[in-house]
Each structure stands twice: as structure tokens, then as C-alpha cells.
View 1 (cartoon, one colour):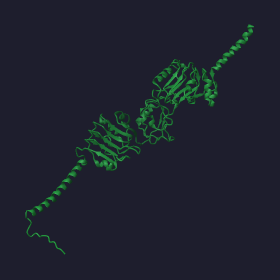
View 2 (cartoon, one colour; view 1 turned 180 degrees about the horizontal axis):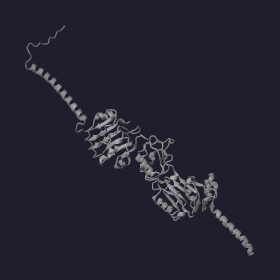
View 3 (cartoon, helix red, strand yellow; view 1 turned 30 degrees about the horizontal axis):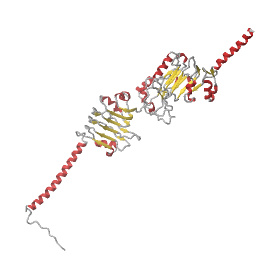
Length: 466
């Protein structure tokens, strides 16, 4: 009897153990057929997510609201590829993860990829952050602009204790995702770190070929592994890159394939002129065209550094000199030939005002100021400034397209308001003398008649009646 029991009981016990292990593992393929809800129902309470014949990609985009977090709330081990991209999730949690797992994912990416989620603030692995680093699969966290610095530091600490892998990548604080498709380079403004592909080619109808790529001047390093992408700046007929900028880009971007157009004008970005702007955008760049407004406001530094603007031939924007308390002379734009604010701008092309010490503006090469507003040139409240009015009338397209309120202290180059006042004064004196002369002779005649000095032989008019 004892032998019989043992022979029948042991197989029963073994079968029970095997079935328990299988029941603890989720390998339901309904996820592939689009039946996500059934997949969640069958697998959300299991401890292991692993597939025998393939490595599936589980995307958070197929889950409703917070179902993704609920699904992974009890999983201790998952050998799958997880993608959390472009979601509205604010928090991600894998609280039950305990056992080491990994997965072979397509395109040589990490097992878990969390990127380009504009609202995501927190990522948690383990319960109360108590989890072994070896339990975390390869991990890429990039382009989540609101992700907290605390989370980033915690993830870096976790990966520091794990096996090194080139697939691991943790973002910087405030890192932005490059829009896909990229429609406007201005979308990249304000981002210290960028993640994604900056792709500009002839097939992008919404984005015009750039005439400058000055935003890359702030590039400090490229962290994306070179084996993941191809870096090219080629076949851009309107893009001008000087040798110094070429060297800079080559030092920041590995394996960069770049071709430079010859005999082209360098286009630089406009902005408020500060010392930093001069150093980063103007000095040594030989800018021929500035795209954007050139605003010199409240300048108090050494004006000699502004001489870097001498190479500028054209401004595609507004030229504004305003509120400069110490600026005496504008002699750093002598090469400027044209100012064009553009058809969409609602501004004059030249605005010079509120500069108490300004005495002279040398724009000797300026030929025209193009503005679609009624007034193209505004000059006012510069008490020491002298200028040739006719020259401003000419470049603006007529006297009626200018607003010139000037107080002149001296004659400047034989022109200006002083000569005009002299002419007016001379004309007034001439008319006055003429009137007095006529009046004097008329008065003299009446005086002669009154004093009896009219000759006796003077004929008296005779009136004849018919």
C-alpha cells in the first residue's frame, strides 16, 4: 500500500508543480490580433511575461488611459520589447519587477524605450525604488521634456549598477523631442537638449531649405551613438557655411558628411544686439545677410565691438536703434545697402529714437528701405543728431514715407534744416524789403501832395461825358 501511494502521489505532485509554473507565465498571442483588452485580462495578473517563439513589441499606445500601468503592476519579469512613445501619460511604474530579463528588439534599440512623451514626469522601477539594477532590461529614456530631475538621477544610478550596454541611454533634464515631421526650425528654439532626427530635405513641403543653420552653433555634443544614425549636410545650394563653422560642426558631430557651396553669402540670424550675440553670431562669421530684426537697445558697452557688422549688406528685418544712452556714432553699418522688413511685418524699416548722445548715423551705402507700412523711416527724439533729410527721403521712397523729428545743432555736409532755415529767412527778408520799398514810395507820393510840392503844371484829370 505504501508503495502504491508513493508511485501515484509523486507524479500527481510533479504535474501540479509544472502546471503552476505554466499558469504563472503569460504567452497569450491575442495581443497580436488587436484584442488588447483580452490580452490585458489574461495576462495582467501573471508574474512573467515571456513568449516562446518571438519577442513581441508591446506599445503603450494600444492601452487606454492608465491600463498600461495597471497591466504591469504585478509583473515580476518581462522578456518583451516595451515602447512608450507619444503618450499622454504623466507617470510610469513597474513596481513588481524583480527578476533579470532582457529582450532582443528590432533596430538594435533597448528593451524598454520611453521617449517623446510631453507630459511624462516620473518613471518608477520597483516598490519604493527598491530594485536591483540587474533586474532592469536595457533602457532608453529620451525626449520627455517634463521628466523630473529626480527621476533622471534615479535612472542614471540604476543603470550605473547594471551591465554596460550601448543600448542604454538616459536623457538630460529638459530634453526636447524634435517634431516629426519637422515643419519649422523655430520649433527647436528654447531647447538646450534635443532628441530625434533633424531632417530637412527636398521632400518636406512645409519646410523651406534653410539659408543658415545657426542654431547648431550652440551644439556642445552629440550623444546619440553614431551607429544609430547618419549625419549629412549636403547638396544645399543656398546654405553658406564658412570654414570655421565647418570645423566647429565636425568637432561636435562624429562622421559628419558635409559639402560647402562656394562663392555664397553668409546668412546670420538677427536678434537683440548684445555682447553675447556679437560673439556667437557676428564676430568672425563675415555675415553678408542678417535674417531677422537687428535691435540695438540700451547699449552701454564698447561700441568698437559692433564693427563686426560692417560686412552686413542686407537686413531682412527691421533696424532699430533705441534708448542707447551713450552711443554717439553709428559707423558700423557702412556696408549696409538694403533693409527689407518683409510683406508680413507691420513695422517701419528703420527706427532711430531716444538716443540722447547720438550725433551721427553713417549709412553711406544704404540705397533703399522696403516696408509695406505707410511710414518706412522713423527718426525722433535724438537731440544731437544731424542728418541729410533728402537722403532719407530718397531711401524711404518719398518724404511722405518718413517721420523725421530732428533738432539740429550745426550744419552737416551743407544740407539739413539749418540751410533750409537760412533760405527761408533770406526769402522772408527779401519780401519784407520789397514790401517796405513799395510802401515807402507810396507814402512819399502822398507826402508830396500834402505838402504842396506837386508842380503847378501837373495836369488835372479831365472827365469827358458823352
